[in-house]
Image 1 (spheres, helix red, strand yellow):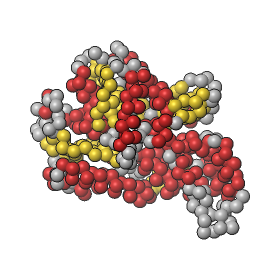
Image 2 (image 1 turned 180 degrees about the vertical axis):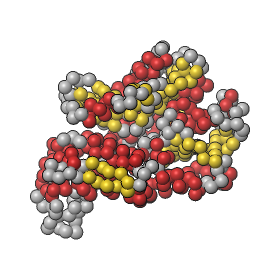
Image 3 (image 1 turned 135 degrees about the vertical axis):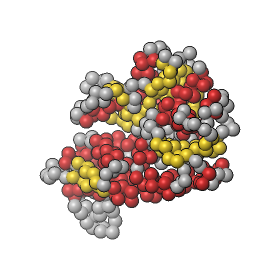
Image 4 (image 1 turned 90 degrees about the horizontal axis):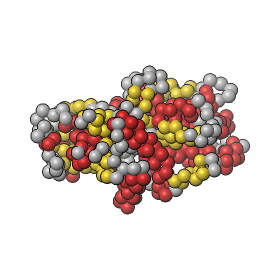
Length: 425
């Protein structure tokens, strides 16, 4: 029985397979610059309107970045657990459901993994956040059922799920030397998830780990939220956010245009013709209309995802350095425009949401009746755990714990294939 563990992520996806009796991560795509094989595939699709092809991952982003005529979609996982799940979107003359679009992407992952495994894959353990939706259990359950249906539609016959932080725990457990109480912090693109678990070399062999699992918790905050907050704090004011009317100087123009432009999975809503008409009407009665011109230019050029990508890249740079530059000249015909962003601005813009994440960490310990001082190891995975404010809070909340930084993008996938081996092997 050919098996795999599939981590469909908000920003990036991975697939682990059992190849030559060894759990291995699938090389999914060559990096367009280095040519090296990458085990992550950005969760992106580009519908090419000229050829009717669908491109995936870095290849999708490349086609979009080169200005080819088509439609880019990213962060599709954010739709699972939301009221948008049952909606669709028009691509040229065809209306696709989001279930179909996610299916296109997951089928691409499956096809690449089968080529690497050299056999068809029939059994899968899918990663899932602790909560697709923090507040509506019925939407949370519907999200899992939708993802399971997609998996079966693309050819998997055995489909099951594992919480992503538990999968990451099983990856970390491969290097443990003795029993330890570990807190797993998995901060991905869409959610932050936590598991408190007892790990040991002996426990790896157990089929039932229920007695080792002390608590699971999660919150719908992740890297794409930090992108949005950084964009709203630094970039969107350059496009007209907080601009007031000439005749109503105490009234700012509507914020929803800027929120949508700063939110990966909502950008496409702004490309409807009525939006430019609305902004043209606004422009006649605002202070500094040239700022609004940049917003309108972004929509005319369908450059929303390019702008979001610039912000995301700056956020990543600010994880390691004090300053970053966000290029805006492609939105300004009259002058070279650059938005300078500091690490302090990043920390400030996301502070409230980061604090909410660590409130959820505290709640995880409370579920288990465990004190911060009892946690022996903090294992971190997911790109957002590299943010300076996150690292600082971990150090301050758990000063006595050993910090282990996992593979930011592959730990969950590695754990999922181990779980698939346990269930189906």
